[in-house]
Image 1 (tube, each protein chain N blue to C red):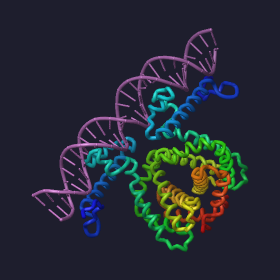
Image 2 (image 1 turned 180 degrees about the vertical axis):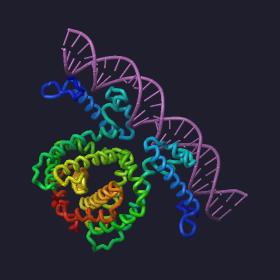
Image 3 (image 1 turned 120 degrees about the vertical axis):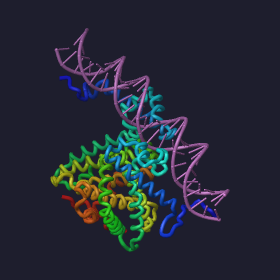
Image 4 (image 1 turned 60 degrees about the vertical axis):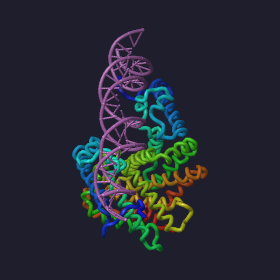
Length: 209
Length: 209
DNA sequence: TGCGATATTGCACTCAGTGGCACTTGCTGT
DNA sequence: ACAGCAAGTGCCACTGAGTGCAATATCGCA
């Protein structure tokens, strides 16, 4: 019967309704990003964005929870991407190897969206509240990773410290190489940077200088 | 001449003014924490807090930048504590050893403030916005650590990735052991937990399960 | 064509946080 | 002891994010 499910009717994808929603979501993203870059994040109000897209300010919150989330809209996508990648790895691999492989895969994606990442990265680095929100999302990310790892390693003793440590470390590797990548204008190949960071961590921090 | 410095006149400490300020600051902290625990963080307004302490809402912001900062008031103190500890370490030590030693020192402090930490920890773990703010502070912390390390290791190439990686990893170790400590009711000796985490990281993540 | 789910909007409201201005009072140099 | 200064404090008005609610519009589908 007519359930209130997420309708996915049309071939090859989503129903007209879903498509429209996605389009509008992207429209909001584009308009907002543009305004943020031209007038600054703080200076731009929800009203401004709504006006450009031609929707009511109230509707904005139907699409995004906070103003910050517009900038970080792609975080969630990447997050699920990584988790998928991770759970797809063979079971006999050591956790750290799987993590490295998963993050490397995503790192390649990053390069194709270089421009987008740079734009968003700049706004994020410049605006404390956006940065804060990104940290918050990363924490959720860490949770998911840790959870996935706990299932993978049958260490079972619910979410012990080790998976958390692994997950957090992986994120640290990703984050710091990403930072370096962005700071150097995204010229070096990102996967290489990520690989190097992972290796530094896997061989142990004890051996520095 | 009469500079606008932080005045410290009286013997053994600060002037009357400073003391009053500190007292009031603590009063705000106490009242706020109490309200937060009894009615919830979100539910408590700045006005509520101000009313209890007997100040105007406006004045609250003279003492704290945000409502969240009341809960995290001791973060800054600990931060400077650690940095001090770190710069005090002998130069011939490997960075990671110094980091471990510094964090261990602070870990001992934590145990004497067990109650306080638990109270604040609970509020933090329960409230996304407080948690977010704590992450933000940690990021600043990471910056300071990385900076201190860069000076220490004469790797000089301005804030290269390595010090960042070290700093971030140390924070991960601290954070995850702290989390575990809090979750288990702060019974195990914290320094031991911290030590273990540091060791896991120093021997390398590659060797898991 | 009409039913039901989904999308959109207006309105009223709360509350964090800021800016400006006036007023008090502890501190400091003379 | 006194004057000048700046920190501390308070009040008022204001902006803007975000929410709850209820009314309306739109669209897919039977």
